[in-house]
Figure (tube, rainbow, N blue to C red):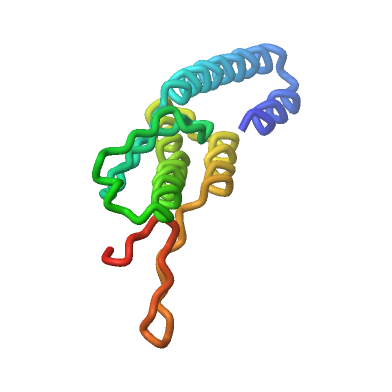
Length: 151
């Protein structure tokens, strides 16, 4: 965006037109900087919460770090070996929503450009959506991390 503008400015022979275009480019850069600053403020306060019906609530920030983890007495109904995987699966689902929440914030702040799309894609790669369950040909199934057999 800015590189094309700069090329057009430098190709002009008229000094007044060059000054006008430089002022326009400066204005665009200031607007982009303000949008990025606003996006960063929104992202810093972003929290994504996922609730698992087994009695787990996990909240993560935009960096994917767990900021809150709560369990209810309902989790004690799970076999002990399923509690950890259930909690982890809840955290992974919350993290997998970071890219979409960041994209929404970018749209709201007017920060929709190549750099922002790159950041969103990096979140998608770092925190991909959990893979859906695929039944086996014999009708049996493998439980996903944190999934109960009767789900």
